[in-house]
Image (cartoon, rainbow, N blue to C red; front, side, top):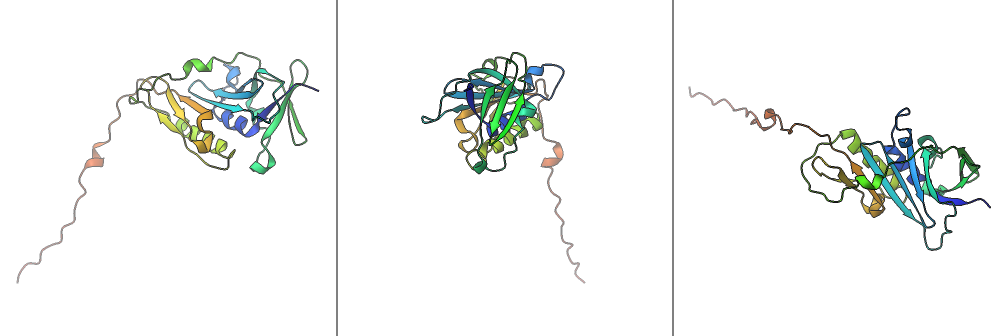
Length: 220
């Protein structure tokens, strides 16, 4: 019987939303890194500007993972299975097929692929240790992408959720997820836009609204 690991496909697809889209440089960022131990799996993806890490421990009654180690799953493989409802099941079996092939198996559908050859960066080094809540500026598209991750993760427990960003000045900001979207098992990092000038609201927003006065009748 081959060594196997239990992988949640919905978490895999959700985390892949922040993976890099570049295919030439830093190819090792073009997918989700799985850190698999006997009793848990951590899903991590980053594009250098944002990062999401999701921790998925096995239940007490679940079979232990026998396939352990670190594997980078290509983005297309992360999204191979189309999951519509929770009732269809989210958990697949990841197994090794030869020296350079892996396989995901779910409900009779098997997807074979080659993991990305490369060394994933030490993502723990960029996690904020302290948050000073100083003003920071962020790319709006990146901010929205964390809510997309939250929505996908929210389907795992039938809820929807949003994220919260704690600004950290010019340092990496901490992104947290509420219980309805991964809760304490999901964290994120968002890099600010450095060197941005202090933003000020335009003058017109505080200008008084003109009041139309009624014309007084002139006595005859």
